[in-house]
Image 1 (cartoon, rainbow, N blue to C red):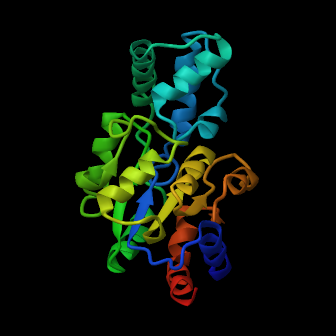
Image 2: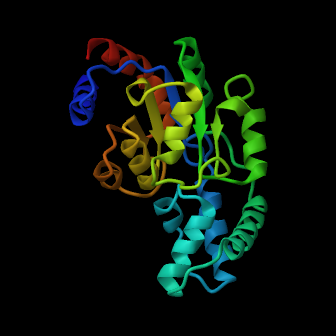
Amino acid sequence: MEQAINRYLTRHGFGQFCPKAVLFDMDGVIYDSMPNHAVSWHDSMATFGLEMPYDGAYRYEGMRGVETIKLLARQQWGRELSDEEAHRMYEVKSAYFNRQPAPQLMEGIRTLMQQIKADGLQICLVTGSGQHTLLDKILADLHGLLTPELMVTAFDVTHGKPAPDPYLKGMQKCGVEPWEAIVVENAPLGVRAAVAAQCFTVAVNTGPLPDAELADEGANLILPSILQLSRSWNSLVEAVRNA
């Protein structure tokens, strides 16, 4: 881990790494919700004549839903959708998602957040989601660990992931600089956004994509699960002290 930190510092030209906040993606990181998204994306887009492969939900994850729809339309229909049309289609996707079983918290996420809080770091949610049902659920499920003030959603930025804007906004809300933040992501586009924001990026590969896709986007650490990150948290803290 010390080597990963030193490579991060060298890459960005920072003289120090002193984390004060951890910024979490939501789907596939906090919630085991990606299988639900994969089904709802596939089935809802099919009603409009657009093809969304099940693994496409993982590849495009992190991007705002309306931007994902615009991208699919651009690729398959060869035309640009208006914001209004894309929003109407996203509402259909959200309706399909809401009919899926309620997603469960990722194993180890509550313990990990408790560890982070005990070490005096802030926790911020940074998601491309705009689905109110899930955003309301997360505040209830992680009461005392997440607050509305430290949440960045699809409604907070004009340019979603893979642009760095969501993570820049998250750091602004936390009052930290890039070398004071750790990002926890699971998707290639999310990793790309975090790296573009110059944050130390931990990728947890909770989906079907190979580790190489996360490494290619610049992830500093790649772990197989949130539970493993929780078990490795103290080692990461120690590596920060020694780097």
